[in-house]
Image (cartoon, rainbow over all chains, first blue to last red; front, side, top):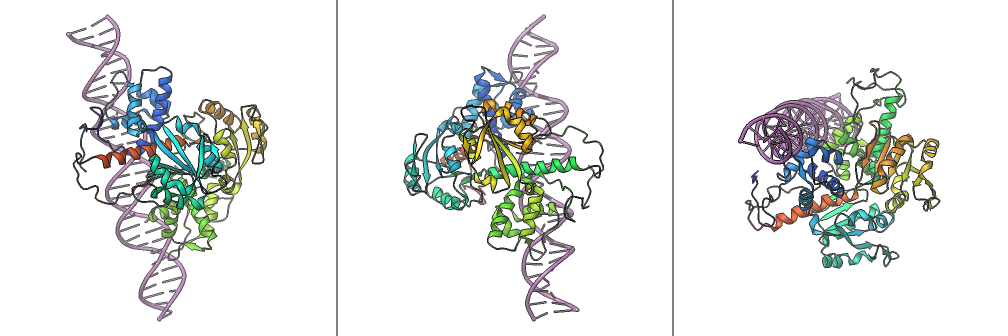
Length: 250
Length: 250
DNA sequence: AGGCGCTTGTGAAGGCGTGCACAAATCGCG
DNA sequence: CGCGATTTGTGCACGCCTTCACAAGCGCCT
């Protein structure tokens, strides 16, 4: 693995590494840091220590420092991190300075809510088109956008240069919709439909399955119930040695 | 850690291990296996090979076998896994045979959709109560349920013995709502509000932040763009050695 | 009854991520 | 100008997870 050290590359301000290929786990945490930083900025804080920011983001401070060190050496020893600079830096890495266009397919129960979700716009994402296969929904206005028929996806996606698509259709139609999105040039898909999508290798897919989250919680309920229900058959009389941190994984 | 091997414990059918304390990563995949198995059962399949089920669930077959081996030794060599048996087994482990009661707090844009989300009921979760702090929303009927005021949470949660709560409020009110849920005896929380919740150690929290998912996709868009945009400055001329699997992590 | 092909279950290795603990660096104060 | 307090950045070790590869076991066919 050739690994260029810190060489700045044309295309951005000096000192910014080309692309630090961050660990996936780090990438997943950067948005959380960003949210915490925005919150700090609103309260007027100029700088944050890794300890403070870690607490605000709900992670270990060492982990946070290691994560941030991957982006480069911002932050001053003895002082902390410059909030504004770090915000700018993370937003750059995440590509949020581009105000990315997003389209949403499937204006059902969930899609309707997503179309109006304020959290998208506030983070630099613009939902620029809504699609549905149901002719009865086409023409409906949601949050200032008109629902279009899915057959127009290709044309509109090209016009608006949409790179990110959100699928909120029933499970059965998720795969054809994904195919259509890919054909229209979309290279990132956020899928809310249960099931596995198969897409070309250059397309990124992230899945959010609300029912799965509940099932994981259900497991922990089951586990907790079976632990407390055990009268004494297990062996250990004392409940536990150390306060087990109950933050359920990722 | 005392760890009883395979001793069957009172409370379930013979041969079922008490509680195999599964790896967290395995738990997160079980619901996906379950969905794939249900799909297979509908098509009339009696048995599945690990290869087939792994493909349906979008994972490596070795990983699937190791995951399932943690639940015990179901499955027959040379044949595969009995679909119906495995469904039953996973549902038991996940605690889905209990038809768990769920309450939802915050009937805004997203909460409204969640209240009507069919995927919950179909997986054995019953949304039994809706709450909101806004008096104008109290009394509204959504999907056959009346929105109640949040002050009644404690009483109703006790009546219905609700153990799982879903938070779909604005960020600012998420923490007080979480506190109220905990006070009402809820021990598992699914949080859709951005931000970090602090809860007692015995309460499990899972977070779903829709904006974070988009930001992760945005990062990969940025990465892909910066890779293809590099004319030849980086060094490596050949794009890659092996076909990089582009499934974005967890 | 015996052998053959197929599939599970698992030992071992490698990689990734986490967390500790500490050296290096910076600021402020006397 | 020097010193101490503070905080970053990171080397290192440990544990979890993934993946490969293969032995063990099962059913079917002859």
